[in-house]
Each structure stands twice: as structure tokens, then as C-alpha cells.
Image (tube, rainbow, N blue to C red; front, side):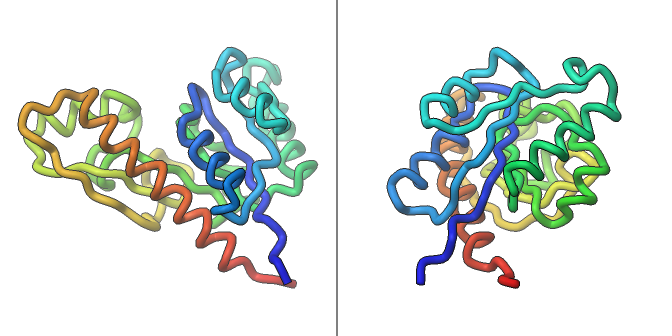
Length: 201
């Protein structure tokens, strides 16, 4: 009997390359999951266009659009419930997940970070800033980390990491590209483990 696909909601703020990598593996039959919802706090985020092209439900939802924090939280929980989301996947989502959502989906929200946590994590450590900091510190290696999400940036339990070397002559951009290749593989591996380890009623 084929297991039903793991129902995923992706939250993203930008281009959505990690979403695209996950969706590509799903479409290719290499990941037993289904992206049922893509939410962005940025109405112009390209990830929404990527998701629409793939026929996936999209929502632009933010505290500003909701009008208050309470309305934002209630709306977010409603969207996740409507789509029967089992796993929330953050893919370049630039906002802190509200504590109410973290509690409701405890152990079922994951994020990927472009460094070897706990180094180079926390507020302000995102995108190219991370790679600039790694190079400025003279690190010999970097990589990607997938972790559970809690109420603080990049502080949840680390689930899996993969290292990449920092090469002589690296720029933040060349290091970013090398880490991104690893991110795409690593995230799908962790999602596959969630899919395989689901508890059945």
C-alpha cells in the first residue's frame, strides 16, 4: 500500500529556490509529499509565481494585511487547518513564527539555515549576510543546517547538517552558491524522513 503524501505548507519571503527544489523532487516521484499551500508575507515574492505555475494554492498573508497580530495568527492557523497541513517548511521566510503557531505545530515546523548552526545564526543572519560573516571570521568550512523551529531565530533542535569547504578566493556569492546546492539536497532528505516516520492513527 502506498503511503499518502505528506502534506506540506511552505512559507517563503523571496524567490523560492528551496521550494522549487522540493517541488521538483515531488514532481519527479522522488519525494512522497505534496505542497498544499505556499504563503508569503511579500505579495511580490517570486515564490508565489512559482507555486501558481505548479498549480499550488498561494496566499499573500502578513500582519500588515491582517491588520493586527491577533488577526494574522488566527488567519495563519485557519489556512494551515483548511489545507490539513502536516509539516510547515520555512524556505527563506523572513518573519518570526508566532508562538501560538509554534505551539500548535510543535515538532512539525522546520527551517533551513545557510551555515553550520549554532554558528552564524540569529536575527540579522540571513541571505548573503551569513556568508559574509563566515568569510570575515576566516572559517575553513560552512554548510547548511535543518532545524526545528521554536520561538527564537535559529535556536531550535538541529535535525541534520551538511558541510561544504570554504575555498581560497571565495566570495560571499560563490560560497552562497555552493551552500545552496547542499541546501536543496538536505531539505528534501529531512522532509522524506518526516514522511517516512509519520505516526499513523
